[in-house]
Length: 340
Image (cartoon, rainbow, N blue to C red; front, side, top):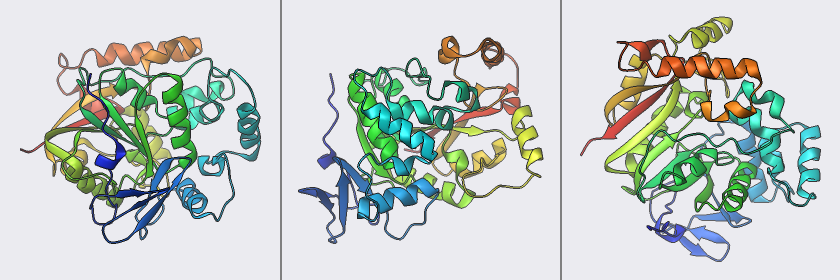
């Protein structure tokens, strides 16, 4: 079985892309830039980049020592009451579900999971769209607590999870260890990937890039192209503005692009222009009636949501038989093959 390469063979400076060398509890670039670790997790932010979300600013503050937060839960973007429940959960023995995951499940998986906050019976690990990973290296942009890293590993991929929230990255490592999954996790920014050039076989992201401004998405495309091998695949889930639910939500917002961490709605033409710089694009249907519906989670959903999942899956299976159906899906995968 292929083994996950050590971080010493993978990491690069987010500023200039040169290899990082481990020096005790730090990582050092050829130019002398020094990056810290938190509980063994490398924290590799570009020093001059802005923050895409407040939890990213909290991660920087924790890494610099400006915030004393042994559990790193200030970086999770949760309420004070939720923080107390997380701390109480860490004191419990033999928990089946990590207390951080239990509190952030709706934020990471969507509104259908609100009723499971604080009451999650199992980890909702989705089915991974790509099969037969066969030891290929995959980077998950915005991995949060690692559900897609676990899903990819179960298909044979070697995952590297990247997220700007150090508390979520630590949760991802705990979950992976609990489930017997080998993966690397890094606290970093998808706009400045701290990985070496031409390294990655698959760049994956789900329900993350949609929250970035269009200028930030252009940076994600550029840095993803840099770390991808020739012929590598990029698979990114994005909201389709012509999907009925997405169009309704966009109209409610006054047809503006939103600010901060709002969802940005994209047409297929806009997605083709943005990601086409990497290579040839195909679109695949993810789901209808919302963003992030996972049929693998039907057993933990209320009956009304199970019906919605079934309807979405029934429509998705018509892909290829109904011309142009992807144009009406609320959520699509952008599948790009890098030019040789």
